[in-house]
Image 1 (tube, rainbow, N blue to C red):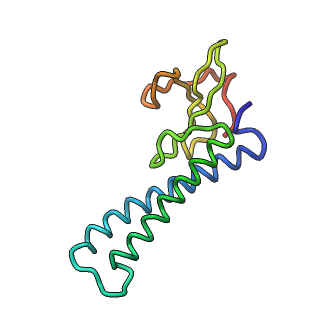
Image 2: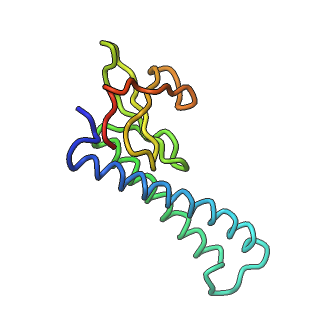
Image 3: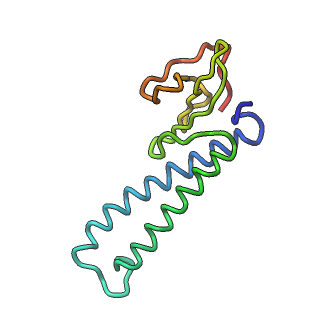
Length: 130
């Protein structure tokens, strides 16, 4: 069963969007922390304690969204790019269908032992709405 059918289609897109956004915040946080570590402001947003709290919340949010994907049969492959795989059959063998946030439909697949860098175009008849 495709996780991109019905209400799950919306869920995967929304979860992937949130993951990409949270990952971007994490990258921005890393930069902020690097600057604040040298000269924190007492009691301000740049204090080590506040930064640690923000960092921990971002990590919890990322893990939560990854768990959401797993609960609907998807596997998060890349939070920064929003790449999601899920198992399916193609030509009577088990493969991973591969979707990236922003793509209008599931256009790619790869073997179970391959990663997203080896993704191949799906035959047009096999493509699914994302």
